[in-house]
Image (cartoon, rainbow, N blue to C red; front, side, top):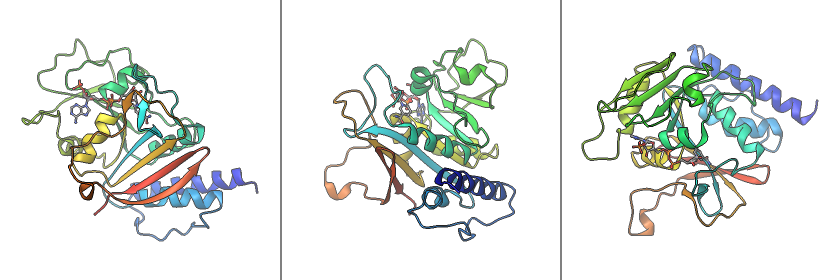
Length: 267
Ligand SMILES: NC(=O)c1ccc[n+]([C@@H]2O[C@H](COP(=O)([O-])OP(=O)(O)OC[C@H]3O[C@@H](n4cnc5c(N)ncnc54)[C@H](OP(=O)(O)O)[C@@H]3O)[C@@H](O)[C@H]2O)c1
């Protein structure tokens, strides 16, 4: 069997475990019966995605950034910072969650579909955090019907209309500023049975979940690209000393010319 076929088979087994988890027929602690050496294509898939097949809630975020920490140019152009292997990886992440969350900035700049197209798997529910309801109604996630879409706005927002098939949810913003509390966003999703969540971007949205201490894992893919300007990746609450920096446990994987850093933020 070729490496590609073995990887496809390994992905199929990962999807089956995800399905068993969803139906409550398996414990995530179930040993990776399919585990192989991490050097083989199927072993790398098991290593990357095995930790995401956990019981209970999962909040994983991803960003694809340049070596100098940018996720898009200053105009918002981001197709593509990372290479095709990372795009496949992103689609695999989508296939393993119930809901994928983006900020208004990404919905406006990228017009993403947020669907699983590059690998077998089901589309997650799409969620956009848009307190002022400033995302235009012609965005694909509002009109293509490819998956359910939740449009989370503040009580003060007054959308002209709500497209068919889109669910408008109103959420109070934090009185301290900074928009919705990420914990409230997760609670809103959990109440709808969406307990496995991918925070897909952009930098502001992922940073708020990270600052709130709510991410179990962060997948940062770094491309050998220098921009020197543009939209930043993470922007966190400032610290004064290096011993206050986050230094999570970290695993590294090659994705073509890029490097995926899988940061374990659990505990
Ligand atoms: N390379 C990558 O992996 C990647 C991934 C995704 C996006 N991108 C790029 O990143 C850029 C967008 O990123 P960005 O950091 O500028 O913006 P963003 O994170 O996509 O969106 C930020 C906006 O979303 C809303 N938002 C996010 N979290 C919120 C919360 N907790 N409560 C309330 N509102 C919240 C706010 O809207 P308001 O301003 O209306 O309050 C906020 O300003 C685009 O250019 C896109 O192409 C790159």
